[in-house]
Image 1 (cartoon, rainbow, N blue to C red):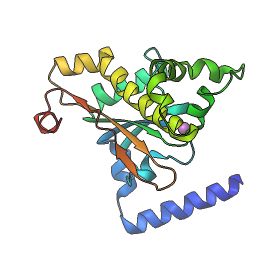
Image 2: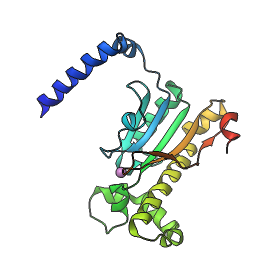
Image 3: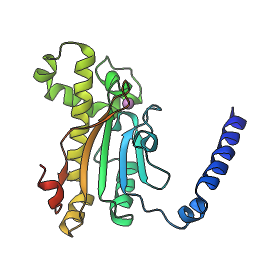
Length: 205
Ligand code: CO
């Protein structure tokens, strides 16, 4: 298994070298990605692949059910590096339909760590109980909950002191919410972008 991965890597790097000589030396000098992606750990939603981006083009943080916990040091330190050091202007919180983490948050407690991690989704489910009850079936209800989780994540990222400080000093950074469909491979904009000092985006809001 491991040998297989190493061979695939050699083949990939060889091909890449032929297609674009100088690619690796250029990337090794510096990274200047245009996007910061906060997504789900799900193996079916790899940021680079679904967004059609090359190595070096997207800075990534992933966790179970793409939850933005306001005191998650892992997420916050990645976010801070993205905004303050890499000066990334486009932050994307990306959820996906058919998310196992969202599903787990709609079921009985499992008595493991996931119960704690997924708590914000249970809270959202309680807050939006009336709307969610209108969904015709459980799958539609869970998919709407996945969307609400993304919208909540966008708000939470925007509320961090990291973003508040960045906007206060005039940084042109925007936070977007997308959702990915496992069934069709499409990313959809949830139209919940929060931006300040971005006339191009504010005109569209
Ligand atoms: Co997921």
